[in-house]
Image (cartoon, rainbow, N blue to C red; front, side, top):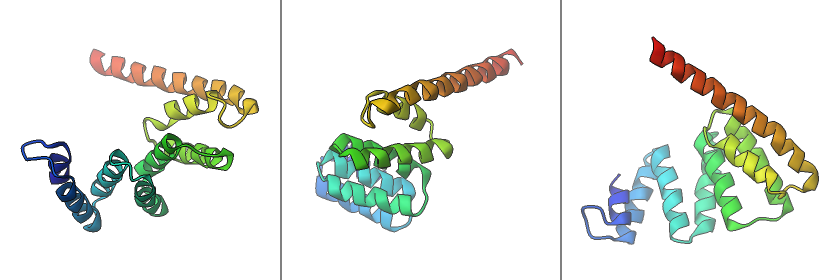
Length: 147
């Protein structure tokens, strides 16, 4: 994306204002990738409230990656107990929809005790599910190599 080029200075002089314009243009044209890249850009430039607003919009439209990234940035920004419960629900929703990083992040999140000490054992159950999925993936990859 052109916004990335300006954001990082790849092939052009770094220009954060132009980067934001291109990210906004992509998002406004209906590109979910553009909207997600805009959210990442806003977070990198320490505009967390704007980042969260972009991600909330994607969640309201039921776009799976936005559930994961909203949880990620809410956690990154720091949260209170009610917000931690919301983060857990967002991760559960992203996992159910098949986001590949949702379950590993949810395991670490629950194991950290942010939801209270009583929820830590549930991280072990989720870890078991994660191991099961990884074994299934490895088995499928091995079978694919043998044929």
